[in-house]
Length: 417
Ligand code: EPZ
Image 1 (cartoon, protein in one colour):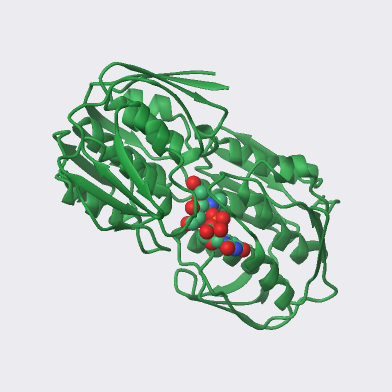
Image 2: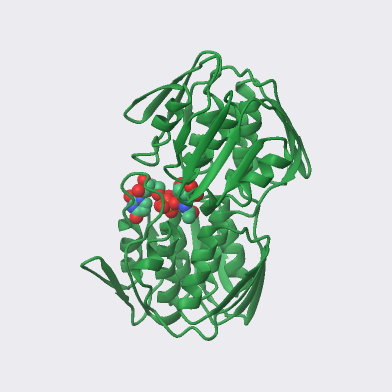
């Protein structure tokens, strides 16, 4: 159990780095088994979810060691195709190993993935796409058994640009005979990062970052090196923390365009956003204006993962802010906890109305999920008094040293593990 002790009331000042992207790291770790290879990953964040992904690799017989922000993986000795439930239920991304194992071994046996409880999180799009590629998939009492004598490339369309299903299909398609074209593919920067990694391992991939991705096979290389891209949601979270508390911070990050929709609303709320080549500066007087029209959507729309942390920044904004959550059916689980701090939030279906209050007060909270937990920390930093947030590991699934990062910016936060 992690316990976050937060004393609010201070502004944030200074500069800090931004961790490597969780949502780029996880599919790339799965991709390392598509062909027998050695690979070195740099800027790999130290996260519970990364630990879980590396544990799956070791369970499958690979070597996988992380030292600091570097990892060495050798997938040549892979010798198993079954992932037990206790490893699958650790995170959502475990489902990506299905496509990777199908590509490598032509079979996979696993159970449905875990991950944040954000409402129903089916994997029907994953299964449908892999079946269209030629996999026989049987779902039997909570187990998913996949076999494929030969995967065959073809045009496959998604009714919704699912990030995970796009990634799963990209991995399996590396071993398919002929060309696979994915229509209505997810366009997130993490998809581009995965394609770059697969290309460095010998895959022929084009179109990543657009809604049409073509994969026409793999001329396997024996090794690959990858530097994980910065985490756009971790960066957006720090910007929201500065907006909420007031202050002047600089993030050493080179990809502000990847969370420009978050920066747009922070600017609308009254923050100054100053972009330069390798850094981003956010200045806030801590008294924001309410904003409306925040509506989550697939990339390049407003990212659902930033919805809770932007909500936290708007709790004391002057007026009534409005958020619409369109990606997940239950992603307002942070709301009852934020109300304990004195926030006034009404949820009606997919819409959350936030009536700005003059002040928030410290309280005892319980983290509900990864981004909800981060939102509670941000709100507690902007509240008067002390808060304690009980967290059974949610925040550290996706944020590396969040306490140290916020402390280095002047936040009064101590993590007791
Ligand atoms: C990825 O989850 C991210 N996780 C999520 O980040 C992120 O919120 C999400 O994409 C959307 O951007 C990782 O990359 C590890 P989806 P994923 O498939 O792949 C429905 C975080 O906080 N759906 O794009 O699970 C689904 O229920 C996490 O870092 C189906 O109906 O997202 C959801 O409503 C949270 N059937 C919507 O699509 C399917 O087969 C988006 O899901 C698959 C998805």
